Amino acid sequence: MKNFFNLKIALVMSCFFLLLSAKAQHIATSSSYDGIWAGVLKNDNGDKLVSIIRISSGTASRYSYNTETKKLERSSFLKEGSMLLGNNLSFTWMNKGGIWSETQTHMIAYLKPNVLYCRLIRQVNNASEDENTPGINNEWSTYYQGKLDRYESIDKLEQILRN
Image (cartoon, rainbow, N blue to C red):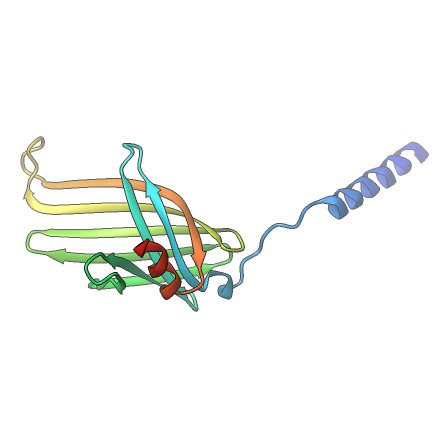
């Protein structure tokens, strides 16, 4: 019985020392996401997509760089939505025109201060017959992923993109 008690004390002490020596995990607050985030996302085919997202109080907006005006412009979509919980933020936008509709969902993870990881799913549906499968709509999708870095402001990111 005494050996069992000593084993129990040894286990408790070991757990206590492991907790003391463990490195702290990065825990996000809603303000951890606030800022301008940009990065190059890649898919399995090697295609690249520049992703620029502004996050403020848990709400995300997509931006694109206009090479003519040398300015970042907020993208406009028919539907947009953001959800934030802990170390994860989800941002989805939807758009349509003519015979097509498109959805892009950004699943964003907080890795550490000033670094996010983004997985982007893009799905397009054309209301025209699929060449390979008659009788259904033509649908395609792709998946991108990569790191997003935080920038101080839209002005700072525009300066970098101009060079």
